[in-house]
Length: 361
Image (cartoon, rainbow, N blue to C red; front, side, top):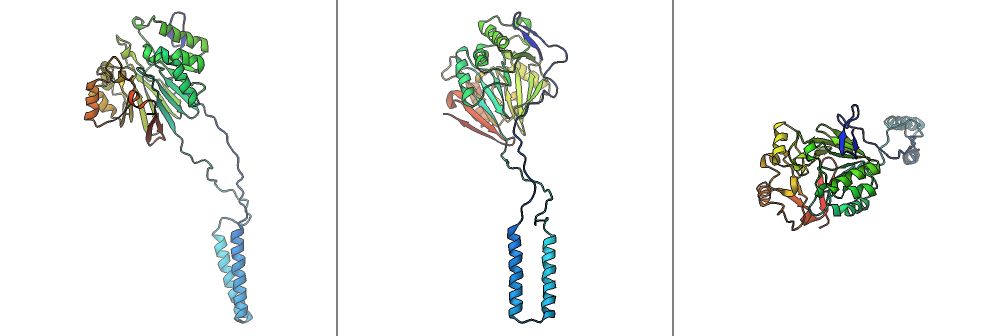
């Protein structure tokens, strides 16, 4: 993993330290509870046998059977009881250990939050006692995002990702890091010609340095086991000539379900991912560039083949997002679409085999 040098605003990845490959194992926390495996006496069974024996003796005596008949019947009864007892797993005071049914059979879930930050992106992955933040909206959204994280119990971040250095994605991230520290911050490895000199970018680099987070230039193939699932970097596959196309593209897989996050990636890098045969299949697609017609080409969308689409977009924005071409495509696909301008904060809960969606509007 690379240390970000905030003085020159360049980042180099030292050898032998990288989030690539199988990823750094996710940390696990929890309380193990010991339990005794010794079985208690089965008083119900004891009472039933005693009652059966008593009834048999009374009936036998009332009918006046002779000793030999009584003796034969007693032997029959004793044999029946012995056979019944032989089929039981040492119920009467046995100290033999037997498997215990786990006390907690609750299905574990992960939540993916698409936070309403107006015309910008902000996504939170939360599960297994861990949290990943992808983008944090515009400069004026930092306190809002930090407040949202606090409201869902996030006090620190295992990972923060700035998909690309446009203010509607990283603008609020410096404020978030100052209030809710992150262990690592991943950003794209930009060509020198695209490294910004904006105050927004400078503020983020300063926040990374001052909070002690580790700055990482993420690369395709990097992965991390986190939140109970696997987070993978898919793109960008090469250097492009604009920041939107340099967006970090990530895929989070939990059980049999997957979420694809595309930042503001447009159609050229989408085509490159298709040509490379990248595994893009996902159940949820966060559409590129707030639903702009410059992103989410039909071939790309059909390859991802999601069940659910999400558009993070500001109500009444000046860009006309989402564009009518995108809305027409979604209508053609009879798609399930969730939008932050219409639905507010959107929360998806996944148990590894299904996804349920809720929102606050």
